[in-house]
Image 1: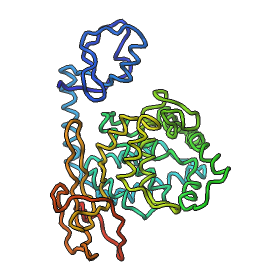
Image 2: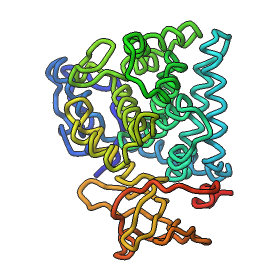
Image 3: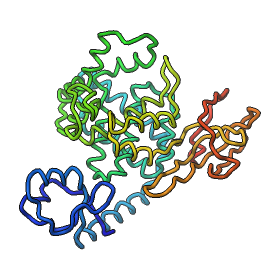
Length: 388
């Protein structure tokens, strides 16, 4: 297939032949070069479903130069330990949200975009360790870790959609700030064992708009960021809030954040329940695809994160308990590779002194299910990904 890029608003005009072929989100040919766009309706359909186009020779050269510049920049900078990155981002996000809640003067937009950029760079260097760092953390409150997790998942999901760097950072910043309107209530609900009160239900449904109000008061003007936050609890079947929007009316970025938000919440333990195992959470979301969540995005999330995400604990055929080090990436049209795991606990319950990594595709190390081990002493999980 020829080199392709995302179609931008204004590149298609009614009554004009297409100067390049148009492809759908799966990179399949949708319209041939020279096809005339007959109506506004057809143009809107193309923008919704045919989101990629062929590139001119000059654009191909320009794209290659940008990629080379990115590669050179990455080589110059030393990768940061994702576990340290998580701590730094968590502290910065905590300070930012506290300032917003207290009404202090703060450049919320720039600070959120900086955190988003840091997470994005960490995902580019080592997505597996970045996912694990947030998944395994218990150093910060749920109200801080949850948006970091959602932002990370959003970034990985957007890679499958070929968002631009600027679009990715906007969506990630939205995930980081989506719950500022219920920050204190969120941590209260996390440890609450009783049923929601009527006032809590009202506050939950009001928090998207409240978050937007707080951000606007702080000077945030980015219309996409504000719309994503306002719509991140909308569902494509109309069952969401605050406006019961449906289908394509919902911002694409909001659909990404919504799915990441839902999955991250499921796999986190609460006072009233154990965490839903990643395998089961993905299964539940997959069943809901096309109903409350976007079908295409759901499939992309499963392909990107894998059934057993990094940082998950699993049981193996040989009786060992292991930790997933590397995802089993699923590519369209091919079977998934198995995850890479590191054995932690022997069948008799003893910790291995020097855990080794194994391919879970091997008969002896096949995964039989998820596990929830308890450790008597703290473990430096960063070591499993080569960081100290």
